Length: 250
Ligand SMILES: [Ca+2]
Image (cartoon, rainbow, N blue to C red; front, side, top):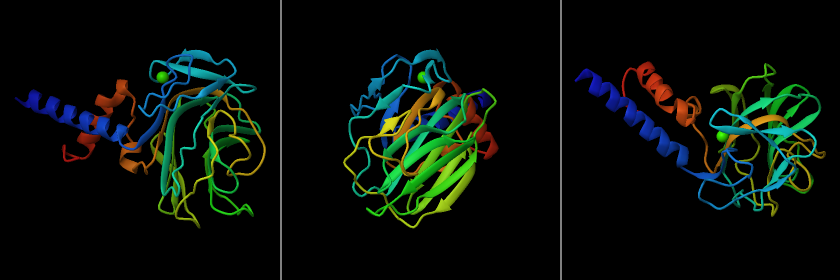
């Protein structure tokens, strides 16, 4: 009987997490094939430039970005207008920390959301809203250079922004803006989208592994960021969370 209760609690936690992972999901690229197809159900297939190598990922296959030419151009603006909450999460295994290595960018220096590696730092910037390009808010942490996979989440919402590395809050800030706004440009994964980034001008191709990229039109919570969305690890991690909280109340 006890064994049944444990199994039921773990299954419930996994089910709840599955629902969470789908809530507000705008874009999901698994990198399991050689095409940047959107598996969120929203039909936002990307346009690939360059030829990534398929490598072993955290979940099935991943892509190795070459740092010189590979980019996924998204074909639509994903920001809402206005956009009060926006988050991304993904796994990365970077292999070049020098200069600017843009992982995700939408918008620009007028209103924008950008995650990059810059001279050894993992940085997340947002900016809004003015043609005079107001100073962006930037939060950061050391980019891991151990050659291993790491999970990153960048969360903006309600005038705050958070950067998580492997489920732990690495930095946060309050912003001068409560929301981002529409801009009429598509986003990009692996280099800047057209124009400029939330940091300002300049392009820079990401170099290294990327896997399981998800974009949400809501704030990811600290609790769910602490849990991997990896289907392979979901049950064990969910059960670990249940045990650490002393019950299955979540
Ligand atoms: Ca994958």
